[in-house]
Image (tube, rainbow, N blue to C red; front, side, top):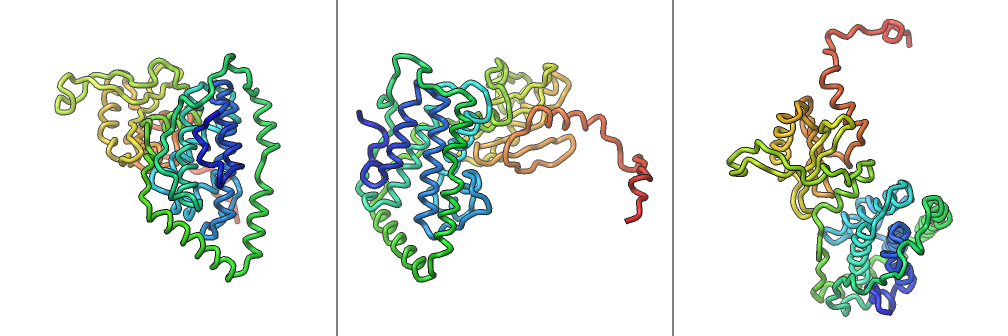
Length: 359
């Protein structure tokens, strides 16, 4: 049966086996599929570290550290890194959170894996320049007769993660790198450079952002922090009171609102496409926060993100700053609580039993 990953067969047969296994589970076992998509990514990242001497080994052998290593990111084509983060985090959610995973949750990461593996084959394979244009086709994915037939339980996935741990493989790669002489490394670098140059002489026709769903990477980041996006008011929440200069009707729709248990808004999130700067959403997010504050008498914390870079702005207390992800509910509750409960420093009385100790 044809697969979206048939292009891997000649030069990456093992990755082909892993990728098609994950692909075949997309509809029948989306949770297991997300796990195997991440596992396939991990295998391909390890291959890169084993075969590209230009990549510096990071401090840790976990997938997150491997893909965040600067030389690894510099080696990627533009817009690929957010895809890897989405795959990695969706796999983590499948294994470490007992939250339901739907077919759409596995369909998007399998397409992101397709784009990354196409790039890997296109840039690092002797046959890369002959790949041509290949589009992801969801119709090639098997439709099961019985949903959930092959699904794995939460405990089974955690056990499988332990069994398939690749920590030893990365240690072997690091050891092999240490044993290589400078001459061997120079030769390997020269061979890889020549291969990449030969492949880049032929224009790459691939569209690495066929769908590029704007909010999906942000969905994943929010779910990672425990936010339930099935809440009816979480997405596209309607507000009134927008400036006429922005919208003649005075109405708008907030991309995301993160709610407290008491029904008050803790945060707003303005989403931008990966290819656009998240700072473009700063003013829009502020206007949404103004509308929600007027309605609920509580000003939410402001986030704006493109799925790759995220900024937080608690404009009651602090200037905006870039962060690595979103905050959990209790962390946002603490920020809101501090607005009214923090005491001025000049009124604070030091505890002499602590501050007066001799060191």
